[in-house]
Image 1: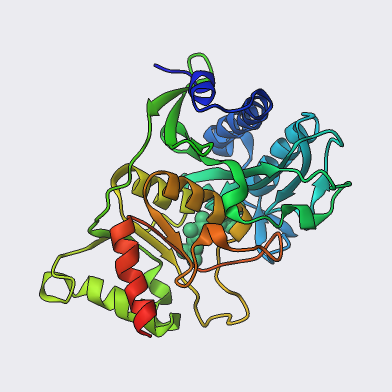
Image 2: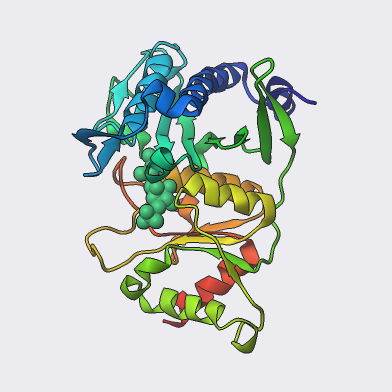
Length: 324
Ligand SMILES: O=P(O)(O)OC[C@H]1O[C@](O)(COP(=O)(O)O)[C@@H](O)[C@@H]1O
Ligand SMILES: [Mg+2]
Ligand SMILES: [Mg+2]
């Protein structure tokens, strides 16, 4: 099977970016080991602290954040980093060429129940003018990503990544510690009969999303003329992975629970990297009004509504927004 390095070279990835990616994956291998040790390593449960999002941090949020922060700040390839678990941007190496935004542990609510969790990352060029930890350097649209992906800590540890030359899947071979290509140039099916949304929020959604989901639930007797199944892993990495494997539509739309928030998921280290993977695999990613990758960010922790997956189904959903 093809090794990660070979795939990245075939995709025309510059050497320094390959070295940065390998450095980041060394951190993810460490996290994969810690996660697999679970209660044996005392990594389960919550801390007493809250992050900038106002969420109680899980021990694994803090542990995985520290592992990635330490390894990237010592690497020399990275000028600055931004993390879900850090209030502000952290300056790293003055000669570093890249910026890394990351969600050290996605699906935190699953960490104590031995369910799917992961690490999500987004890599961009560091602008020449950047001195130190100016967050403005990170405010680049998702189209500017030079690499994006996630590592899924599941029954097997998998990496799904794109450097702008298609989306590939890799599996960690724990016998020698290397990632091997297990699915090259993933193509997301155009159509689907599977949707993923937290239905318990239905009463809080806007009209278009209410109408769209009601028509899915109406099944073959309804206007969509086919039956839909539902899945919700409560970890974006898990739900998006399923979509990249077999299609589907994932939505975490705006809702009126907290009208001041545009959505739950964060643009820089959740929506943008997932949208990059999805679009590189022939899928589509939208807020309901705009393509996610075209959004000009205003803040490193900004939230956006998210609708992504099989292009045909996402377009069908967007029709409900156009009619409103
Ligand atoms: O608990 P809910 O409302 O269903 O939300 C689940 C969503 O929240 C998240 O867990 C948020 O990510 P974090 O765990 O990194 O904070 C997503 O992975 C997931 O899609
Ligand atoms: Mg997350
Ligand atoms: Mg997280």
